[in-house]
Image (cartoon, rainbow, N blue to C red; front, side, top):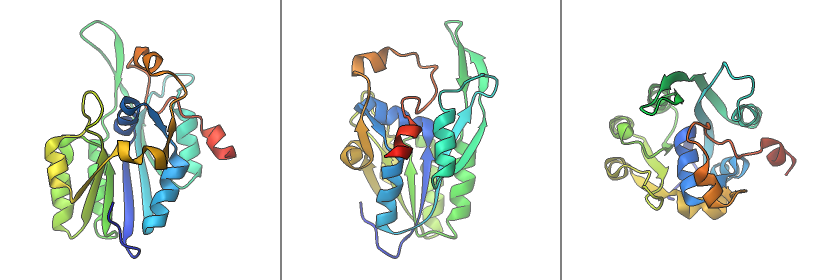
Length: 204
C-alpha cells in the first residue's frame, strides 16, 4: 500500500462484505490491529464501520462487536435489517448500506486525501470515480483469492490501488477459531462478524 505520512486518511468498512471476504480466506479481522495499522500510515481522520442490525432479536451476535467498535475509535453507521423470505421459504435478513457509504465518502472527500474502501462491491465503481474527480486517491481492500472472488474487476480497475485482503492477513487478522469446514457449514443467515469476540480484543 502506498501512503504518505501527511495523508489524511478515512476508512470505509462495509462490515458484511469484509466479514465474508475474511471468512472466505479463513481468518478473522482484528479490528484493533486494523485501526493501529492505518494510524501508522498517515493522519487517520475517521474510520467508519457500516452494518445492518436485526432489531427484533433478543440477542444479536453482532451487537457485542458493534458496541466494542463504538467505544474503540470507529464511527458506527447502522440501520435496521429488513426481513424477507428466500426461494426456499427460509427467513432471511437484508441490510444494504451502499447509500450510507456513498454519502459519507462524498462528504469526506473534502476533508481527506486518501480514502480506503473495504468492499469488493462493483456498485461502488461510480462512487470511486466521483471522489477521484474531487482529488482523492482511493485504495480498495477486498480479495480475488477466495472462492468465489469477492472483488469486482471493474472496481479494482477504477481504484488507484487494489490491496488483496489475503496480503493483510498477517497484519490485521488472526486465525479463525473454527475449522473451515465448520465455518462453511454455518447458515448464511448469521450476521457479519459473529465470530469476533470484542471482549477478548479489549483485554489484549
